[in-house]
View 1: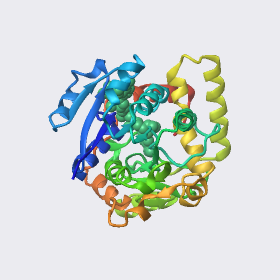
View 2: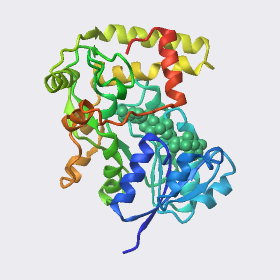
View 3: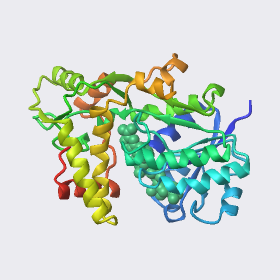
View 4: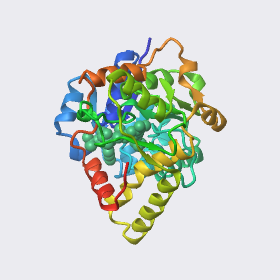
Length: 340
Ligand SMILES: NC(=O)c1ccc[n+]([C@@H]2O[C@H](COP(=O)([O-])OP(=O)(O)OC[C@H]3O[C@@H](n4cnc5c(N)ncnc54)[C@H](OP(=O)(O)O)[C@@H]3O)[C@@H](O)[C@H]2O)c1
């Protein structure tokens, strides 16, 4: 059987690396990695190349004619570009249309969230989605809820600090009862491999899911498993909205300060997940999403409890080690007095 050819942007990133692993393990794809010129010689790119992946070096912000040549011949193009570079996918989508790509998967991979001033990240993705639709380019949009790897609280003993994005991380947001869709970062790629091999998902939104849990349920689960008691802090919906307004005002006053604008990210995630409660199956269905668990009942994603078990054993892999954007985000949160 012929393999489908896939061009993957982001193979060295968190989401993209999961996708790379999932595609290679699935065994039905010939995978190439689209890499920017400045990273072509990086150790991460070298380790991707060692996995029998063709490295395609290209500037997605360069000439559109060259980009058409780069994507020509690929059946599927997937983008897992970083959270603040969404606009850079516009020419890639145009080139994919011109080159006759059969399916374009833009960088979604976030929580279920409507466009329209809930999360600026979602709105920046929407611009790309609308461009795709105007092109009449076949697409699939894949969201994943919150990663297991960013959805756990820290413990008083400090034993899970090694893998935590924020330390301490003990806040319950807006009461903590909103149900949340969760997916283990490592399973995103396994889901993607199945989703792009499926005619039912063409021109559709799909979300992946391992569990649907509220913050209160997550806190209780890790307390029960660790025999530790977390001293919770409580952040109300009113406080979250006030912090968002404060950061927006500061961003308008100094638009070039990326650290400050990035500090909106965790706040707007909390607005989305906890205040509005968007990231749950009923609302996803209302928005027209297909659910990957229903499409692929044979695939058993890692459950959140399994992840916590690894975490408590000291075996979870920390995410975003030495990532420039995360350092900026943490600096911005400090500067703005944003409590996670
Ligand atoms: N659902 C969740 O809980 C959750 C959590 C975190 C992130 N996300 C979302 O996941 C998505 C992907 O983010 P991420 O954090 O996984 O990304 P990331 O780790 O920052 O990786 C970004 C990737 O894009 C590549 N890249 C950036 N600009 C490029 C360019 N011009 N040409 C070619 N490659 C380029 C980078 O390559 P090099 O740097 O090696 O050149 C890297 O491989 C975002 O939408 C983000 O919001 C979701």
